[in-house]
Image 1 (cartoon, rainbow, N blue to C red):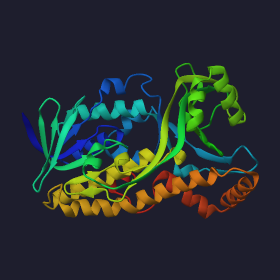
Image 2 (image 1 turned 135 degrees about the vertical axis):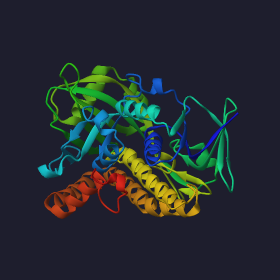
Image 3 (image 1 turned 60 degrees about the vertical axis):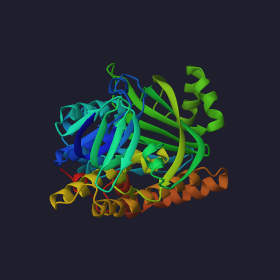
Image 4 (image 1 turned 90 degrees about the vertical axis):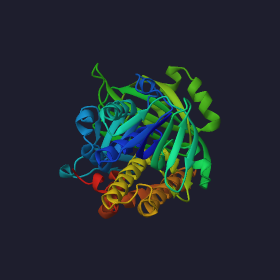
Length: 406
């Protein structure tokens, strides 16, 4: 059984893959999206408890794609970012001017999925193959195809791997990946707290890893909430997850220094391992990588999803511009432009997050003193703070049209 040939075949229907599909569809391309997961399970309450910071540029993308009205009331504005070294004196406060708006918005991943899946299900240019397993892939001179577990064969002109860090499409294509394991694990939890967060995201650095408190909307009972992302050594993770709720909260309270007052758990704990990977190339014959299939970074600056959304915006523009010129979506010129556009940005973000992880992971008073002196310098230098804020908001460099203000 063979389905119609479409312009683009996206393997992976997560946050990046589905955003890419909607953008391409709105640009006039026809798209197959294949995802092995069940969307109902992915949007169930408490599915994974994760939350994501959506940068200013990524929010512009959602506005252009018509997603903003569905998400406007679901996210919490990040009004400032406070960076501190182990609660010692001195910190950096990143706070934009009132006319500049927020530094981004925090969303539960579940809310992002609900919005994306709802739009994709109604988009006539998207053929969404849910709960489907790809058993083989083919790329030829004139097109690509994927065979599903039920025998269906999906054909297109360009294949996009958006399956995440362990992308089988990338590995099957033999694309080299530089990677290492940080030997750390991120512990995720939802906290309710007595003091309002006032939209401030806290990044408190300890030698074992960062301790991040990310502002979320108040819950239905009016409780103030934040998402906790606590990085611990891999050897300690199992013990942290086995702690009683009271013991876990006591450990968290000690690391927070009372910035949010009294705390209680508002969502179950979960965890995931932390590693780094970066591909030397993000394109091959009729193949493009996007999101975590191309680059996986430490969550230290909350840029992982935003990096993938920038991939999506750039690829949408490259394919749409190429098609207007009569080029095949899988044409080598289209893919070369995409790779040139994304290579330097992705590499610089990857290097920066890895460097921060290692810098703040150096133990000892001397190392802490050096870091705090550097942070004090950044705090006093407005141009440098402006550069860091522009990077966090995703508004630096040459932007795809979809990342510019709507």
